[in-house]
Image 1 (cartoon, helix red, strand yellow):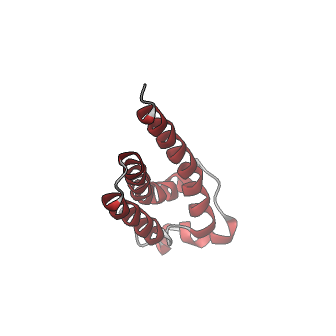
Image 2: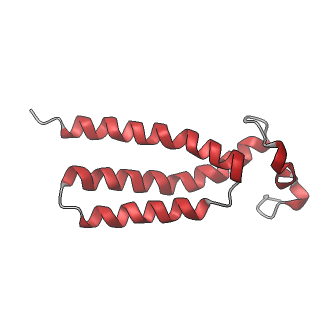
Length: 107
């Protein structure tokens, strides 16, 4: 029996499950400013996946990279969820949520 596929599915579930709260905490403490770190991490994992000979580890790096890249969009969506009141706003960064000071607000 080959359990690599099942193990990869479990790892994928764990990666997504871990990155979700990290997106929330990143937005809470730092806003959307560190999006480029997610980009570097995602691209780094995707490029590394091209050079790993093991299919399992290559796939795991690819899943991690894609999840990090997806996290960039989620980071900006999280900011919108905070504005709607669905998640707590960091009181130390309240000015960043004011529409008149926001450059990325859709008008």
